[in-house]
Image 1 (tube, rainbow, N blue to C red):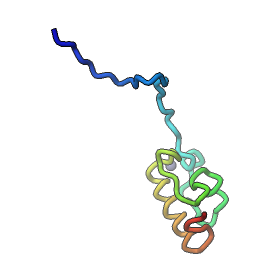
Image 2 (image 1 turned 45 degrees about the vertical axis):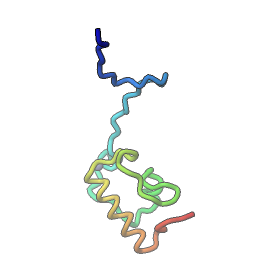
Image 3 (image 1 turned 180 degrees about the vertical axis):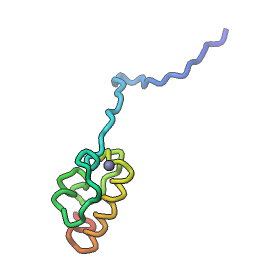
Image 4 (image 1 turned 60 degrees about the horizontal axis):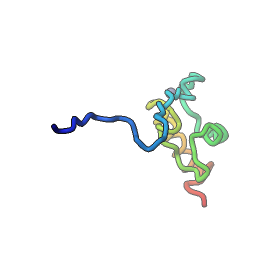
Length: 89
Ligand SMILES: [Zn+2]
């Protein structure tokens, strides 16, 4: 008799299954209508940029689509005005 194969969603490597916590958008939380490109302290401290000034993806920041887009625009403006570097080593 053939062995019945079932779909197994669990990794079988001993690590516990972890359900990712639903993150809430930091900008929605404070009801920000727009993100100021001059507010570099916010962009840097708000876990939106890496230490190399790269924009963190939405899956890391937990930003909603609207605010992630606003953030991207703000960061790009700030870069253009040399408020933050494009890249740093
Ligand atoms: Zn948001």
